[in-house]
Image (cartoon, rainbow, N blue to C red):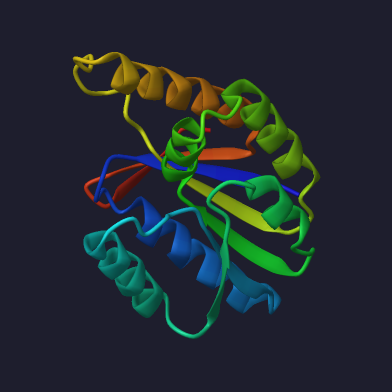
Length: 171
């Protein structure tokens, strides 16, 4: 099935956009709304963010937690599911903190979304527009995110960039 990559900066409106189009699609098809969340609550501020996101989505959405094994989470969903994954940059951060093989994880994700039978939006932060980070870890993260986005964009049926709540279809 087709999938869409949604890129944008922090607080750009990318998650709201993905949720809105997913809700519209589910209304048309009668599909099940599923949020695949990658965040981990390491502190009270992140716990509050996660709680706020859940409240904003409301009861229409089922939530699947997948901070590491995103492909297994997608493999567990079906053809009637309308899915938003939010977000790939948190997922990538989680993998980096665990010192996982990022190239392999990215390749597995591309293969996983290719076989996914539902409708899918992948949300991720575009971090390549800023200055070159001043430390090796941040530069590695930026580079890995860029590589992941390139691989997914090539495989995606559509790519949307969101800036200041406005959308620009790139593909």
